[in-house]
Image 1 (cartoon, rainbow, N blue to C red):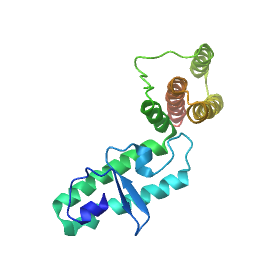
Image 2: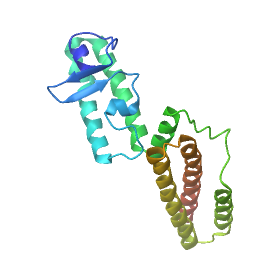
Image 3: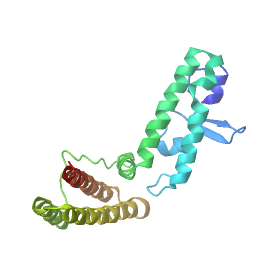
Image 4: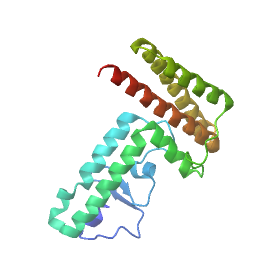
Length: 199
């Protein structure tokens, strides 16, 4: 990508990859998925430090100011790349967004609005949490519920990792992601209740 810009070209086709041996970077096309763009394995488990380092490398290489000598057109293409890199980084660094993206890449869309099916035991857990939240009177009881939901979130993330990386069971992962989405929403409700106590 950057070699084309430095040569004054603004088209990113037909080549799929552009390599830069002078800095060790290899940047794929705008149509590549996020994992290809960041040169990461297509899996849920990721090294956050490696992800951060790769993001900084890509942003440095794609910064529009580096292409000022090539003119406005080259800078516009560099800006497209910068936006694309940031969007991919936001998806990859967030476990929930990363899981949603992986499910969609493998043909298992989440469809959270139209598909609300949940395992019976999780539905029971939802009702218990709701009742506990309604009955909670003080900070201690709210923090206890928050701790329970945090434990459940960690457990759900472990299930998602197994389904995606080990079992390759993407429909199962999609269902687990829907459960995680509920847990995160419920956690936000608890946080709001806790915040209201201080007002």
